[in-house]
Image (cartoon, rainbow, N blue to C red; front, side, top):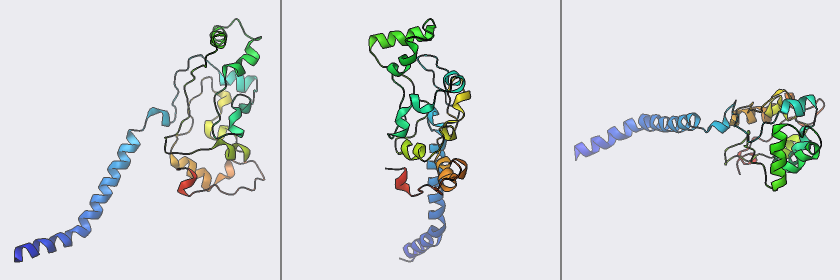
Length: 194
């Protein structure tokens, strides 16, 4: 009877140390595995191979086509969207039609099939992001997507980590136009995790 009581007292004595250390070890393991096993599509520099070569440096840089011309969904819907083949053909029915990429584009257009662009910027499924409040608040696309107008082939400029989003929500001054009345973004969990 004395041995059982002693074992119980020893357990209680050491549990106040062992349980917190164990909890921290488990949490550290979960976070470490999450950090080191994230898919490539969430990391800075991600640049998937696209079905047709497309230069943002030419279109957004040299030709100064506004981001919202091709990604018109950014101002009016949750997702910016990828331009349809029809949008590309608005210009390429008449310009640079002798180029190999434009011939490929024209063939896709003639077939009436969508072009399967590979998404460059994507977030984990548990993250909710809406372009509308950001674009309509005056935040430039380059804030998150980088200087796309200088990129020959677009790559993910910013890590899609929560700390980047929270940093801007807490101190958005650098991302907003001068004179903006916005002083911070929401920091509660439901703002981004629905």
